[in-house]
Image (cartoon, rainbow, N blue to C red):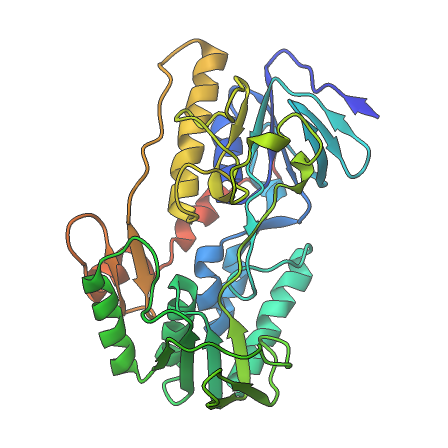
Length: 369
């Protein structure tokens, strides 16, 4: 089956319904025939996923059906298996050949930061089950001291202060990356106040046999022979990019040595004029929701300018080491430019609401029409 998606308005296919994909689709819905393609049933507001683990009444707020996103365009629940130029072959056999193609397929990350359940009901149930498992555990181990591991530790201690939480990492300090030592010191100070045990510079001989986010006898040994025990553990490392559909196509060689799709400052795939890539799979910036959203705005704005003939082409400027690490609703630290901001600023900017209202508003269509 071939669908050329040819209408009076130019056609845009967006592959992937994460932060970048839904932003592009929503922004262009009024000027183009937009088709959003994703194998799952709905958008997941991953920024608030860890809060939903400790406050299960948040679960319904972070899972939002795609059929409520677009007023004019359509959502197709399917998966891209091959992309060659602007030609997209879906798992169902449908072929799409749009005027503009946006690659926004993102990445996978261990649960509960991300959830790989394709159906909304199953995804919500997995989250609620994980909450029950956490409630029944006295000792928790988190492997990974990056932003996710630290935020997870902060959420658990904020809502369950009596639980013993241990965070391990092979690195000698928390929050690897282009951040200041002042920020790391402030996060470690707050974690210590919360009672989180940090075991840094520790290499585990192997990961626990017990499945993550599931209660059981967790027992690991470091290469120095020390033993760490817990009732529950979480994996807070391991990003996997979703670009496998490029293999064998004309865009296959446009990935860098790390697997990211190379883009120019206008968010176009290198050498292409009508194919764009945004979010985690693009090499434009770090893998964060804020970066994906800004890249999507640039790409969508440039496509809009090409469609309407109005406005100038814009270029994406990397945000630099901007970050806000929450440690529960009222804790955390971040870097928004010069210097380090403390818990009150982070709580007001992110921690208390986790941007839930913004994304609920985006999915306000009653039935997508």
